[in-house]
Length: 81
Image (tube, rainbow, N blue to C red):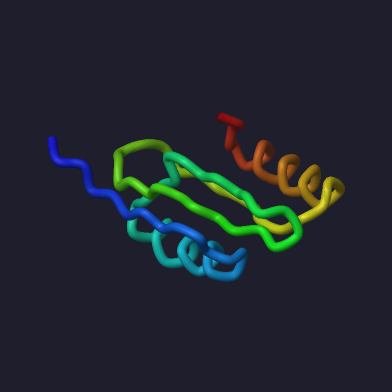
């Protein structure tokens, strides 16, 4: 089986969000994600097109908003992995 994947390196938060917006609808999921360079975060990710359940994610939110997103997601039937 051939693995269909995309590697994105040294992406800003805005660029990572663009990658997410473009790749998720095409069936890609991040199989690795690194966030580094405190104060000016950069993202590197490997996105793979593999079969699996639907998923969701949130970016650039604080703890209270994360809890709201978690509550909404679990109410919709999603589970943390």
